[in-house]
Structures are given as structure tokens and as C-alpha cells.
Image 1 (cartoon, rainbow over the protein chains, first blue to last red):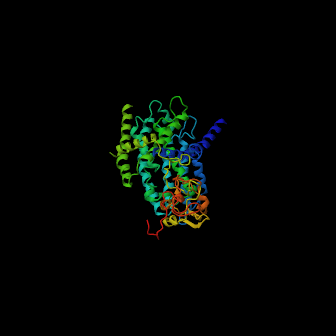
Image 2: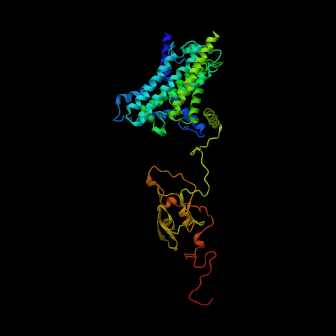
Image 3: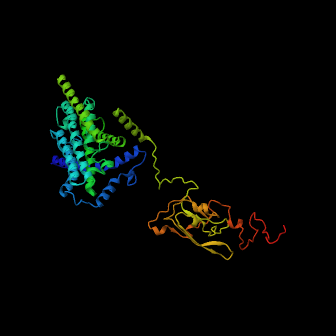
Length: 317
Length: 173
């Protein structure tokens, strides 16, 4: 009985917590950007402006939810939901702490990669269904960018899998008891960081949106809560990637003194702050630079990392 | 090379987190306005409390956006004054040319810009909205005491530093 209750709590609590965290993240990001740009950011609504996301949601809800008449209506409506849903579903495999987490899948990592790959559909379909040149260009860019970066994102993670000998995220965390994988797998960590940001199409890799080139890219035609869902989807993706980096490279919930969940949240928050710093500091590369970086530098590096890791593990056996 | 500059940028932007913020949080934190700031226009009074404005129309003529309207009249003492004086602040550009044109220091700009209204019509200020009880920037100046125009209680030649009137028809010195 109590098992069922715990499972239910996990199933309901995880998406709820993630959505609340995503809302808070929009606020935290704006405050941090403000901090790094020598200004304040939203600090009026509630203490330190924490209630700003509430005000934003109310505003989005009250906006006209317009579907352009030339658009492909069903696809147009489904696309934003797809982005958000895949992000939330992928959270099922994230182990926040012992006993907290929706499911222990023995192929958890592969499940995450599959869900990350599905996110691209939301973006591409949204760009296609809008029937707008800018949206289409944004969608196409998203497709090319995400597929390119997914290749070595998976490869970068294989180093960790080799060391842990498992695709199960809980096992991966447990095997980091002695040493976090960020040390032996530093190249893998850096590659996954870059690939993760590119996969989220966040700044500096926000070419699918690229405001100054493509208006707003794939979500040019979106308004109201549909736009809000793209937005929430992006932030859910951010939290997901940060949580995965924590799990795979930073020892998950492991840490002294503090309870495991607190350690997990702290590490994830630190990675998220770094994501925001990336956005605050770096300019967007040109499209061909992005592709060249992915295929000519990062993919060979990922392969090299995989070969060396595999070789060392074999030699030590 | 690109890697290095990116890392350097990251570090420098991170350091900005410890800088003082440039934002002035306006309603809570009032900015300093110098005394000669060109804000809301007022009409000032003489040290003895009379209106300084002599309704000469120079401000209205000088105004580049035609936002000043007035009508001259005269009281029983012979003093000129505006019967109406109206400034449309929805047109005013706060250039201060009216203040420069004013021969009696009557019209002055003040360091106050908080004049927002929800109704545009409320930006039209009438004379009673413009007139203040003080002397503004020139506390000792009184136009009628230095002017050559005769009014009740002050004849020709009785103003400060004014010579006695000369009979121009006489040739005698």
C-alpha cells in the first residue's frame, strides 16, 4: 500500500516539481542575466520578483490564442505539446535521490536519448505547420542542428556507460561513489555540455530562433499559451539536461552531510546557472560554423574519447 | 583561439556579477535633478505677492510648438496681467525657450517631471494650475519696481534706478 502511495507521489510530484522549477527558472534566468548585465531584472512582483512567472502566465493565458488560417491546424496545435510532453516524459528516468524518481529503467540513458530526439519533431513540425518562411527556416535549422549534435551527444555519453558498465542511471550514480565521472571523462563532460546546449537550441546555439535573422524562428506564428508551451518546453529541457549532467558526471545525489535530494538539486542548479552564464556571455555562431564545429571537431573528439576510454578500460581488465 | 576568447568572455561576464548595478530604481530611488532642470512650467510671483506675468505674449510667440495660449488684460492700477494663461503640456517639449523669452522672469521651468495623466485633457494646465505663491529662481526681482511704466502708486521716474522724465519739448537742459 505504502509502495503504491510512494509511486503515486513520485509520478505526480516529479512533473509538478519540474514545471514549478521551470517557471522559477524563467525568473531566475532573468534575474541572473540582469546581475551579469549590471541591472536588476524582474524584482517587483512578490519578494525579489519570484511571482513574476505567475504574472507572465496570467498574461499568456489572456492573450489571443491565434491559429493562422494558412497553417496546418492539427499539427500546429500538437507541435508545442510535443516539445513539452517529451521533455516531461524524459524526466521519468532521472533519479533525483534514493527512492525519488518515477522509474528505474535499465536502459534509462537510451530512453533519454530517444526522448531528446523526439523533441526535434515538435520544433520541426511547428515550423512546418506555421506555413511561414521564417518558421520553416527555423524548423529546418533546428532539424539539422539537433540531428548533427545528437550524434556525438550519444557518443560522448558512451564513455560513462563504459566506465559504469550500465545504461541504468541509478547504477551510474552508484558507481561514482569514489570518483565523479567528470574527472576521468572530462572530454565527454565538455562534449555533452556543448551538445546539450545545442540540443536545447539555447543561446549561444539558438540558431532555430535567431531573433535578428528569423524574427522568432520556428515559433514566429505562435502566440498565447502555445508559445508558452514552447517556452516551458525549453526550460523543462534545460532542467532535464542539467539533471542528466548532474547524474552522469557530477555524482548525482552523492555528497557528504546534506541529504541526497539537496545535493542533487544543488548540483543541478549550479549547472543551470552555468547555462545562463553561457547565454549571458557568448554570441551566436554562424550556421556553417555551427555545422563545422559539430561534424569536424566535436564528432572526431567524441569518437577519440570513446576509443581511448574503451582502450583504457580493456587494458585495466 | 576561439575557445580561449570564449572562456575569457565567460569569466569577464561572471565578474560582472560582483559589480554595482547601473539601474536607478526610479519611484523608490529619486534621481538628482539639478536646479536648472527643465521640467514642469510654472508662473512665479513678485516678492510682494503680485503676479509677475505682464501678458506680453513673448513666450507664446517664442514657443516652437505653440503650446502656450494667453489673453492680456489690465487691472485698475494699470498693471497688465493675463486673464487666461493656458499651457498644453501634451504638446510642450520642455525646451525652455519661453523662459528665455520672458522679460519679467515670470515663466520658469522647474525640476519636476512627474506629470503623467490617464486623460490627455488633464495635461492642459490653466492659470490657477500654473501660478505658484513664490518667486522661483529670482527671489529679489520685481518687475513693476524696475519698469518704466507708470502704475497706481508709482509714477514715471519713480522706479528703481530710473531717471526723472525729461520734457522733450523743451530745449533747456
